[in-house]
Length: 548
Ligand code: F6P
Image (cartoon, rainbow, N blue to C red; front, side, top):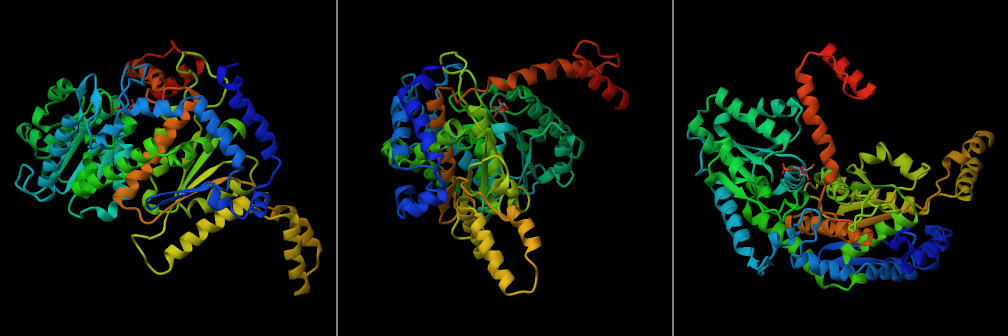
């Protein structure tokens, strides 16, 4: 057994779970009309309600005791002061410096002048592209920007540009190519004119297979469609830590936006990786995004744990995963603009905390990261909510909801919000047998139909309820609020990593597949039969060879 699962705080929570598991959420609300006030927090325009979880004041005290036992406050300080808490890669995790205002010292040097230098470079570049002073090789202003990157060099910028479309200009259209599947690049380029297309090659390492293959193919397309070699420097820019490889590719240093090894890929949208965001919505709006994140950083550092949004969001997750045994977590934005938020969170949460070896090199004996998935409302309602309401698994869900829509047509927003309120209430309350029976009796008394068919359907119409949800409401999805929301989840992930004693900033688990793919790619070049793998892999590869 690990020290964590043998600790007093852990054992106390286990005992407490057996008490809380006996009580239906609806009962908790009936007994205490003040639950909402007790279990909701506000930060600027954001309201987070976690009262629809099986918690009581004692649960919170016990979870806070666990957080203190795991020295959460100390870890928060260590992260912000630039300690090398990414111990397996010997790096600091200083994404907060990308949105800081004050000096941040790393290895005795203030890194903020570098951060500001790159922000200024982004500002000058994006302004010139947006106002048309920087032009393509034929003298026409740029109209399209293609970001070629994957994982953290793609998901954040994709999500943010989609979310902040109302702040975008309609003369610069962002496109994103990530997949090694040629369809992604081909279908994107098919619609574009090389004379007015700008490419951003975004890769922290500048060695990622997918990105480099797509970047080379984009360069070939550019040369084959009218661009010349000397025009490449005006149409291709790079975001990377790897100056040497960027230059080898043919992009000169002036067109490179620097990144640093103290920024993790999935935490990098605040850096020059956010260049497509700045190009799409302008630097003023990009700065507002940073301000929103900075304000959440300040809140995270200075607010007592029990009033701290990322801390409470993280601890509620721990309560569900480790004590109620939930295995998956739904993220349900009731905002079409946030449709890519679940995909973004998948990398943030699953690549960060999908770990089974702790910081001391020991295998853990408790669950860590959970499966994150989701879909924007109300589409999800017509797809998978059946399982959320009446399935055999309990799946906690986060609802993200704006009070004001950017597209207020008809009564759409009222209907959307009505659905959100209804779903979280239904998941909490459910509908008992007696309630179904009472409804049936009313129907029977007002019609001539017989009772028999109703009796048969009765069990299907019962909803168990007791399904936990967290609701995060905000005034409107503007750049600042989005910055705060993203930082909220970044810090939530950190809180959970501290409780689980895992390093959320490495990703060794992605290496094996990459390594094998390299070898297999060589084998696929040959026409010979494959015999060097297990029978399944051999069989699959040989079928492919016979049918390609
Ligand atoms: O998927 C593994 C990973 O290393 C991610 O952590 C990272 O965001 C992505 O690949 C892309 O890496 P790079 O920016 O170096 O191309």
